[in-house]
Image (cartoon, rainbow, N blue to C red):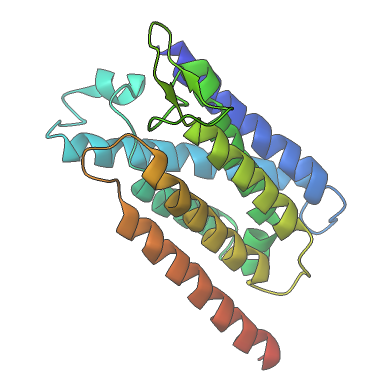
Length: 224
């Protein structure tokens, strides 16, 4: 078992747990414990789904290479993980949009925890930088952007913003989706990547989140 990755995952779980206690504990119709259990299940489904997609992209058969699936040492497809996790949460919540809205701030805080978990994995740094807060990897004199810390801070601030939005159907979940995609899009240029990263996926996520908000606005204006 790769324990550094385990600690990173547990940091994300801690973010989810704190988020549910901060922002859903007082909602009698959806107790925090129930929301947390649903989020934990969705996160597990997303992690496995994202890992399987990453393995297939690398030409690995997840059935015959089950060890690589468990160790998760080759990376996880963030796009696939998001799709699987959101789908799982939607299905396990009985297809109720209000549950997605209640969970939205905690999800962003959980994502912030996952990115902050780079401290355990020693994988916080990106492109070279001379900024005062940049730092170098052990044995290197080149200082780099702590890009995963940027993402963690952005997502944590996003969680606070979303938690303060009025409880209108689709408003919090749509905003959270747009913010999460936008933060990844904004930080992608600071990551080390040969291909430039899945920028267009994150751009599509921003568009989808905004479209989500438009639909939610129309639905709230003309309730059925």
